[in-house]
Length: 90
Image (cartoon, rainbow, N blue to C red; front, side):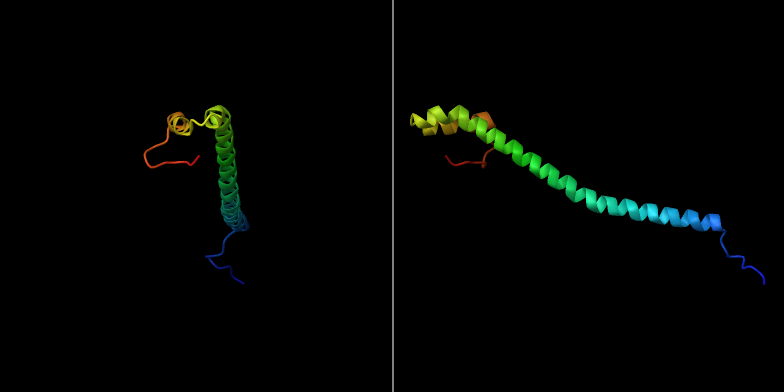
């Protein structure tokens, strides 16, 4: 029996298979890791917003309880550096 000229060696076969599985592994890692990273970033930003809201409530609570709601709202907008169109309700 004669061997075909297009036949690949065992080493080439394993090299191709290892590259193929490496690419598949990389793609699977990205498909799993990306949602995890995005979810982690979402949770971190939610915690940060909560901390800022708690700090603002602590700082401006005396003004609100005294009835200076408009003054407190104006100072909160300044302190939080809100842009035009960004609002919050007291």
